[in-house]
Image 1 (cartoon, one colour):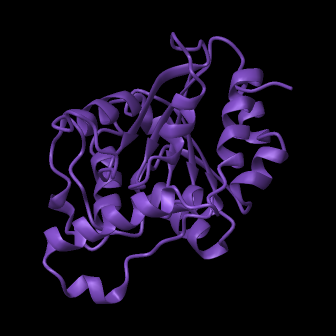
Image 2 (cartoon, rainbow, N blue to C red):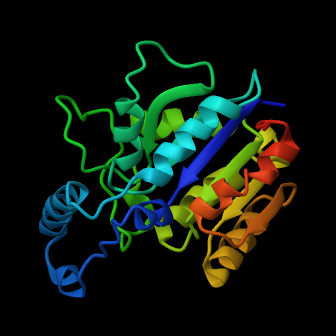
Length: 239
């Protein structure tokens, strides 16, 4: 069994930090490139607003640093456009990769507002209204996919796989479930919204028939405060 915990973060993580911006309905009538430009500007602006509170993320990273059981490690993926998690990881100032971390890069599966000198290898920006084929092959996306199909322990936070591009991700996993470790994987789904939690669990069960799915109707912060019991049961975390 792979001893890596693959973390999938959806909008629930951003909302918990106070970044709850939704795409205004009137923007949907704009050309796609105009929508993306407005979204990037809005998210970047809100990321630096005074009301943004990333204490949950910092507590999360401290928990992993202090309580991960060697040789378990953690890898991070998100469908969010913001880079709040990446910013907090970088703020830790590690000169070398810490032993609890499989990689300090956060894989942005739907693109990111982060503007680096070279974004050519990053995932393309995907809108929630986009069709499945909008998620094209990129170095970042392919690398992330090739990591988690070999893993067996997953945590999904604030994500329900509702939009078409996220459903497409599940179909891509379904294609390899009979041949690779992900087919017998163990998923922990954390979401305070009962409907979204049920939807995510059902979609995972449908896509991965051999997987074990555990739902937890909590906010991310509350689940962390409860000392992530499902990961303790897996042996990845100990207090």
